[in-house]
Image (tube, rainbow, N blue to C red; front, side):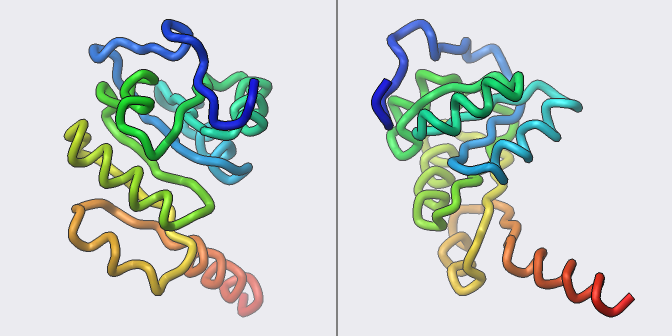
Length: 148
């Protein structure tokens, strides 16, 4: 299957009555997060990148393919029924667009956004989401390790 191509109708679909956490991402960090969450609660990994969707499937995750910046595509994979959506792409611009879509189109109350560049944090202020800045978390962890 070509990159950014969805599965045929029916293979991606999820009922709006279903719920859980959706991790939308395109790298090993997003897959690792989905694996950790799947041990605790129903979790779906969504990616536009076939290689990462396939890697998630090999990790026994419920993995779905969608254009993560297209509302219709996200709807076909069940985002509308999500309790929580984590926008965990490696690109901040993609994460803000995904977060805006799930907050405004699907009224998902709990949206968490991975932020790589702390200077982009202002972009998330107006859409009522929580952010986790990987740069800050990693810098703090390494500093803590070095000063213990």
